[in-house]
Image (cartoon, rainbow over the protein chains, first blue to last red):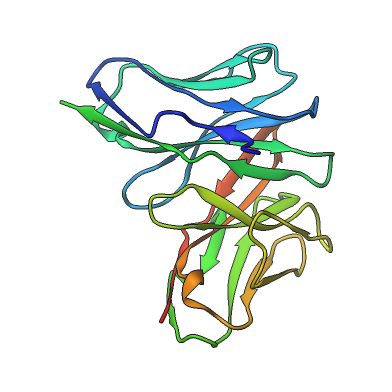
Length: 116
Length: 114
């Protein structure tokens, strides 16, 4: 069963607009963590933001915020005031498992293109 | 502070050859991971290690072996390379620093098996 689902293969957004990238997850664990990564065309994986399942506040990091809706099992990434440099693949990932044996699994990704 | 360092960056192997991909992290993280990424695809977990001396299979472990040599190092070995193992390989480590959970990746190894 797919653990992490990113339903948007591609997104096109005008520069300066806000964009929301969707991520839903499936787990029966009470303790888990959710990550977002950016992969530009150069290929490196850049860590953007993390949300723990027990965190009461939505995580924020500069222009990135994570819209965490636990009951709906969704962890959408919001990028405010998009820039041309935001064009990249974006991956959602979940870490689950008991302490000391935690997997980190990824969704299929969303390709974001920012138009000038 | 180098983060996660992978070697080599590029490698071409002939079918049947063996090689070891090296990974080291200097962030004192407990967990380490190996992934492969095929063109246009997400990352698939090959093996992971929750701590020194322990390793577990991920989604696609066949054809690979790993060693968690110490807390810093986690190597991936291809015993008899096959063209289907042509991919980009990423190592990652994860832990808690100053109360914040983080997970960082190496630069990747582009492997071609001919």
